[in-house]
Length: 90
Image (cartoon, rainbow, N blue to C red; front, side, top):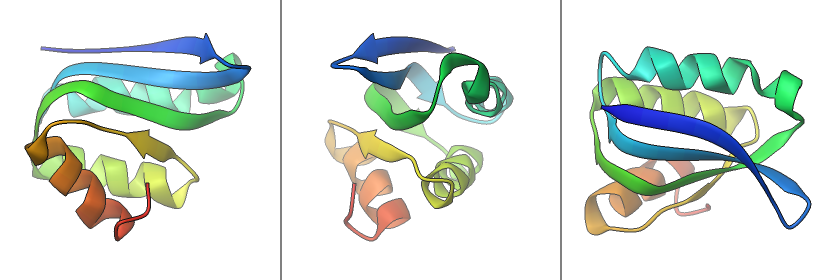
């Protein structure tokens, strides 16, 4: 299961993601990301609630990063994925 929702924090729109970012749920996150124009410009994707990322999730994170997303992550697994996606730049 995966949940994604927009929040405003410190004047910035944040896409908060919780659960497993794996095939089957990646499409849901992609729809949320594509709908960001409706919520304002998302610059931060909060992955602190994510417990797992598979290959499909990694590909989506790479695309999001290329489109300007910054990531907030915790946990060794998710932090490692973010480091690989961003080259160490969050």
